[in-house]
Amino acid sequence: MTFPERDSRRQDGVGTTDDGGALAELGRALRSLHDGDRAAAEAVSLGTAAIPILRALLFESDSAGIFEPRRRAALALAALRAYDVLREFVATWEPAADPVQRMGDEVALGAAARMLGGAPDPKVFAVLFAAARRHPVPGLIEALAHYRCAEAIPIFAKALEDDLMRAAAEEALRRLGCDALPALVEMASRTEIGPCGRETASEIRRRQSALNLIMELTLTADLWQSLRALVDHTDAEVAALACRIGIAVAEDAEKRNCAQKLVDLLERAKWPLRQEIEDCLSEHFASAREVVDRTLRDLADNGTARSSIRRSLQKIQMKSSSSTA
Image 1 (cartoon, rainbow, N blue to C red):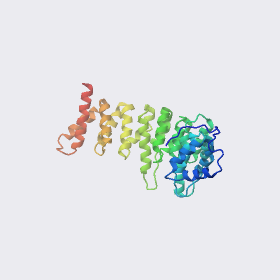
Image 2: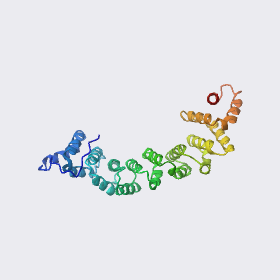
Image 3: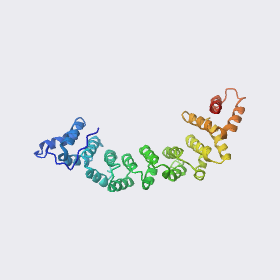
Image 4: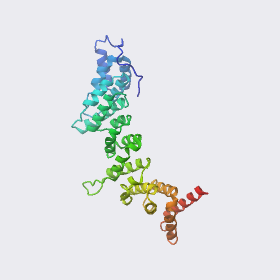
């Protein structure tokens, strides 16, 4: 839902002589899940007269976690250019103790932050930055990403650990490019063991995310030294990503080692990881040729055993032959 922007400084004639009854009715309609969209559009058409009603709604936490009316209020306030209200809301926001209520509050916070994101005002950036340090949510991460400020890299990197914020954090780090590389290498290489005595699924996804982003950037041989141990990681995707980086930038001996580990990973890789490994080995066939040829010879006498690996290696050979033909 979007509205045409209006200037909140404009003193509209509509609604300025209202005795309060119509505005009170508008407030009730804004809180309706059925009539809220219509009421929000009407609020924008009223101009500045509607700002107090919208502000009250935005600041009104719902114990049931219902957030849609407050999200609409944030959009309407932005359409009225009432950015001071949105900034105040983000700056003073505090998480509720009740988890259900807090969920709705977080959506409202994210909506208000998105409306502020990219505003050419240092005060806005300071408010968003402080709020994201206290209690990051996807909307705050998205809003901060507009500024492409290296100061926010630690916030984005930390957000990679959260399943709900990871996509927003990835996009924010992607915008920062090579400036984010040291933080990404640290996030990929850091090991945190959970209460169960091993890495949690969320921690593994954090590694995968960081490595995928590193793959998009220019990696040096020096940084590779921080990642080389990951080629032996128990998670197939983490190990494959590390090998794909190594086969691209490591010394020749380590490139061949990465090729061998990628071939070994074919046995337990599922699609699409198998396809990614095949593409990588085809792209770096000069480093992988010896391993691929030897493995195919070893498989020649195995009958149907490991036939899927044989097919993958044959595909790699054929791709490489066609690319050099």
